[in-house]
Image (cartoon, rainbow, N blue to C red; front, side, top):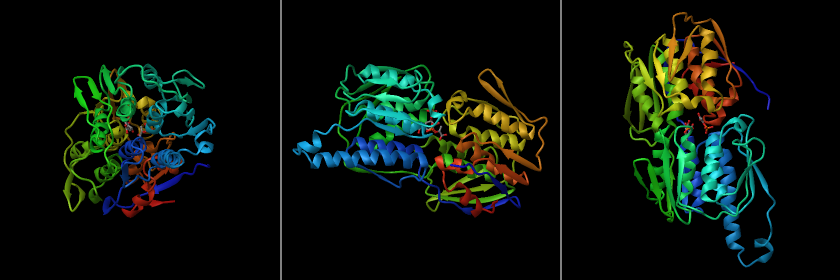
Length: 431
Ligand SMILES: O=C(O)C1=C[C@@H](OP(=O)(O)O)[C@@H](O)[C@H](O)C1
Ligand SMILES: C=C(OP(=O)(O)O)C(=O)O
């Protein structure tokens, strides 16, 4: 598909409006896997429009339909004895889908090749594959050791219930294992080695499993899930707090703002709801009422100098771009996982912020903004590196930069397809 750029302008420094956000990509991707593993006993409500979710739903809901067809044709040897050809599944740029499906197919009977975009072939999966192999899965690499595409060969027979996994590379490996745990004949005792990154995502997984009837215990670094049945229930997907973060940026860069985001509540399974606290530093008040959250802006001096983003890596671009735009020389920790996401997000941030004279300097585990040569240009071209969050985190700069050109506008579809039309609701123009 040809990439198209847009030019974004925002007259005035006021942002008022109501924006209905789509469902959380993270919650929805978990819910879809749970739905499929439960054989349809668990249903998903308020499914997200995120392209990653639409892709995953397409794959898994076909699976559920086939399982139902197979059940209704039991005894019909013609259908049940047919050997299905090995299928190749391409999940494009969807990291969670890649990791969750790896675990899902690892314990199945079919042979499947799982592949994705060129970037997906550079995003590591070896830690998860090793864990699944020690459980008893047969998995091989089609191209490079440790990276997709992979072949899952079926014939799963569980060898052990006790496995270890490194916690500091991606929590998605841990979630993938927890999602399948209740279906393992021997259950799962998962030992997390070292630090756990993106912890709220693991908590979200366990909370959603619990809603679906699956109990667990988590003591120190060991999570245990016994073999058990899913309950007949439905899972409601909340609006996406990572998507909400861009509305917080818009409010932070405006002189005046009143934005209503319906459906968001003060209690959320999503760790990215911490954006309410992070953005309080920039004078944004979050008021939960009328079934949603109202953001209002009040100018105030910014005090916070260190932001630890280990538990909310998807907010890193949002917060760093806002600090850079406001000339706030903060430091950031917990950014280690950003290099293996949709792009190397550290390099992408450094390159794009340099266009407004801001440096993001690495000092060991800490990244520091240097705004001493910051200048707001009249015009800026933002490269987006196939990363939805580069486009969405930089878009609010149109409030300050008279003409902001964004490369490959469709990249936002991965998590927030309505982003550009929503921007127009609060007075942005797009050409
Ligand atoms: O489990 C999830 O839904 C996610 C976990 C996080 O990844 P890591 O655990 O790799 O940091 C996050 O960045 C990603 O967008 C979604
Ligand atoms: C990292 C992200 O997604 P994923 O890992 O699922 O591709 C993201 O949405 O920022």
